[in-house]
Structures are given as C-alpha cells and as structure tokens.
Length: 197
Ligand code: IMP
Ligand code: MG
Image 1: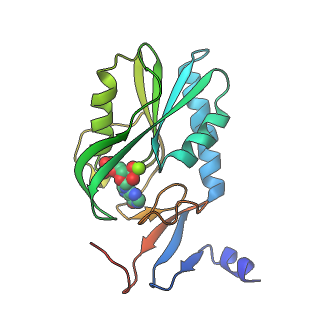
Image 2: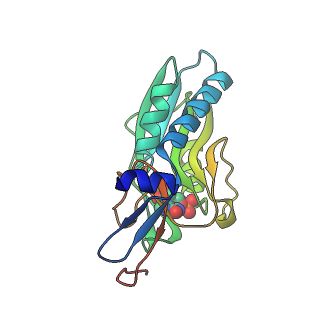
C-alpha cells in the first residue's frame, strides 16, 4: 500500500533519525535505460576495439559494472582510488591517489568511468596521471554532470544526466559512506541533527 502511494505521488522519501531525507531525482529504470544508450554509443565510437574501463573507487562501481555489461566485445576493467580532502558534502580540491591501477595503460583505449563530474578537480588530476602513462587515447564517461560547480576545465565525452547544483546520493554516491547502495539517485536534504561541515 505504502509503495503504491509513493509511486502515484512520483516522490519517494527516506527519513532517518537525524532528519535527513532523500527525494528521488533519477529512478533506477531511467538510470539503466540511459546506461544502455551510453554503452551503445561507446561501442559505436570504437567498433571492434579493445576497451579498458577504469573505474574510480568507490562511487563509480555501480555505474561501471552496469555499463561494462552492456558494451559488447573486448572489455577489460581496472580500478583506481583517490581521496579529496574536505567535508562530506564539499571537496577542497586537493586530490591524492590512494590505490593505483593493477596494469599498464600504455597503448590502450582507456575509458575513465566516474560517478559524478562536479568541480572537475578529481578528473583533472587523474587525466594528468594517466596521460603520462602514454595510453592510445583517453575518454571520460560520467553518470552525472553538475556543470554549475565546475572549476577545472574538464569535459566528459559521455554523460548520463546533467543535474542541477544539489547534493545527490545513491547509485554509488555517498554521504559519509552511506546511501551508496540506494538503486536510484536522490537529492539529500540534511536534517537539524546532521553534521554539515
Ligand atoms: P570533483 O572533483 O569536484 O569533480 O568531485 C568528484 C567527486 O566528488 C565525486 O567522485 C564524488 O565522490 C564527490 N561528489 C561530488 N558531488 C557529489 C554529490 O552531489 N554527491 C556525492 N558525492 C559527490
Ligand atoms: Mg567519487
């Protein structure tokens, strides 16, 4: 009953003890539909070519696995992890590598897969690192793009959804490591009991 009600109102809310709430912005169905289109687009751009997908941990894990399953042909995977200093909802712009790739990217067609392009500082840093390693070419695929917040001039080649300047969670995106497992993307509103800085 409750599910039916939420569906007809086209809004789903999750409330916690701290008063945080999440309003669904992009449903799991829309996410999957768009990912199928993006996968097709990527394969069409590089027909018959081995593609090396590099996911940025941890946020991109859900997007990378769904995307990889939809790209036909030769696809390999690797992961890198970075951390940016700052609070839970704002990055300071200083990026640090915390886990490097397992294998060389020299001569390969690399698709960097990221959850969200926000200020662009993370991807700018990663592009610098990867370009030194002489790949054949690098492309960027992001599930979400928040262009209003851009500081570094990074352009993504494949964008799932362009979103307004709001803090989102779900589908890999976290707030203090929570909400990553939510299958939809939602806008987080912090309650009076939440720490904001
Ligand atoms: P950028 O370096 O500012 O482009 O930020 C990229 C990283 O910041 C993403 O990989 C996320 O981990 C995090 N981030 C940026 N915006 C959001 C958001 O709205 N929700 C959750 N994480 C975000
Ligand atoms: Mg991330």
